[in-house]
Image 1 (spheres, rainbow, N blue to C red):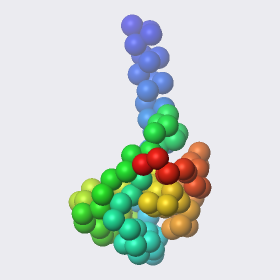
Image 2 (cartoon, rainbow, N blue to C red; image 1 turned 120 degrees about the vertical axis):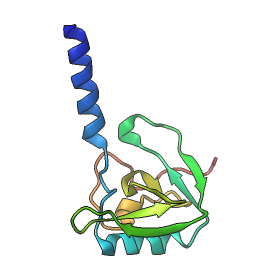
Image 3 (cartoon, rainbow, N blue to C red; image 1 turned 180 degrees about the vertical axis):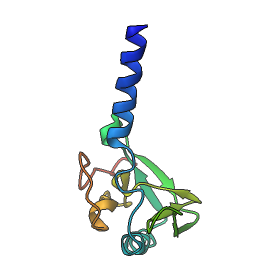
Image 4 (cartoon, rainbow, N blue to C red; image 1 turned 90 degrees about the vertical axis):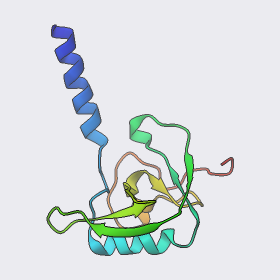
Length: 116
C-alpha cells in the first residue's frame, strides 16, 4: 500500500511539473503564434520534459486562437485542439514558445527536423 501511495505521488508530481507551460497565453502571444504557424502547412510536436525523443509532424488543416474561458487567457488551436507552444515547433524546427515570447523551460529552442 505504501508503494502505491508513493507511486501515485511521483506520477502526480512528474505530470504537473511539465504540463501546460505555454498552453494558456496572452492574446498577443496567440496572435503572434498563429501568424507564424500560418506560414506553413504543418507543425512539429515534441515534449522533451515528458521524455519524448522523436518529433512528430502534423499537418495543419485549421488554425486559430480562442479565449480559454479562464481569466484573460487565450490558446492556439491547431485542427480544433488547443496546443502548448512549449512543445510545438515550426516546420523548420523553431520552438513556438520562443517565437511567441512565452517563457518555457527544459525545451530546445531549435530541433532537427531533417528526417521528418
